[in-house]
Amino acid sequence: MGLFSKFIAKIKGTNDFSPADWAELEQELLSSDVGPRLTQEFLEAAKKVKSENAEEALIEIMTQNLSDKSHEPITVQGTTTIMVVGVNGTGKTTSVAKLASHYKRSGKSVVLAAGDTFRAAAVDQLKTWGDRIGVVVVSGKENGDPASVAFDGAQNAKDSGSDIFIIDTAGRLHNKSDLMAELSKVKRVVEKVSPINEVLLVIDATTGQNGLQQAKIFTESVEVTGIVLTKLDGSAKGGVALAIEAELGIPIKWIGTGESETDFAPFNAQSYIAGLLA
Image (cartoon, rainbow, N blue to C red):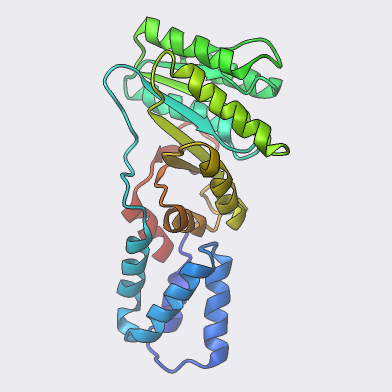
């Protein structure tokens, strides 16, 4: 990514910046999707430190603004139940499949619930992924009750002694209150069988600050425990991950960097920061 490499290059070797220079640096930071609050923190730090220490100062600010919650995915004894939420178009269903593939490759048994019942393409997509990677996909009738599908999936995972149970959910934000009520219902119904251990919110890294707004909406209604950041490749600025962690305190837990099922991995904060600076 290297968002801040140009920023550091400008600061190094000089302490004599004109107002126009600072304005240009501010615009670069804002365009990197870190948000206005962090932009001001970076600028204030840059003005205070000696030019040769600019990189160390930025690393310190970035590290301080990461969530103090664990970035490690949650797993428990027995079946680990994961609910995946997010708006349509972020790569939510694909992320469910890639997450399943990751656990399957690590030797875990996996059950999926195709809970986005109002979008037939999402159900078909998940079934295709399930056949490809060799995991059970529980589905229901088109336009059926998502909570019922999730319940059946939870029961299947429990009865079969599966290690991982992942629920795909709907992501229609045109009526926020209905969607959030539906997600709450899914959570309540599933927890009649087993507790939900992790709620992952899928954010498209290319949406920039709009991703932060989506995170705020979902965290108002469901207890999000981690973020899946998708499309974190050459087309994404990537700074939104830092903004989400700083503003909401929610740890990024997984990143998607491409189309392949293997282009998906646990988030590493140190590698992420190094990438922003490289």
